[in-house]
Structures are given as C-alpha cells and as structure tokens.
Length: 72
Image (cartoon, rainbow, N blue to C red):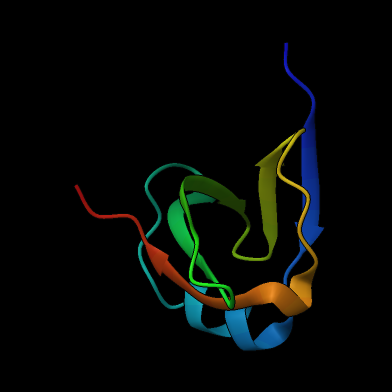
C-alpha cells in the first residue's frame, strides 16, 4: 500500500468543510487550488480537517488557496 502524507488544515478551511456533505463516513473528496495556480484533484480530507496527499505531493499549508468539494 502506498504511503500517504497527512496535513492538518487551518481552521479557515476545516470550518467550511465541516458544513459541506461527506462522500463517505468521515471523509470528503476535494480539489485543492494552490497559490501557484495548480490544482490537486480528488484528494481525501478526513474529519473535515486532515488532507491526505500522495507521497510525492509535498506542499506546505500556506500554499493552499482554496479547497472545494470535487465535482464530476
């Protein structure tokens, strides 16, 4: 199984996510916009506060501009 990186989101993001629907028990599938304009698509957030990334996706919390629910 592939290793995952977990990042605790600042309250400004988790407070928004807690009011949005879950896609499963305790998680949401989101798209993350970085300040450099790149998107990280279909990422899992656990309990509206922990962003999980693949091992090669190394970012700092301050690089996150926006998090929104993934739409098909």
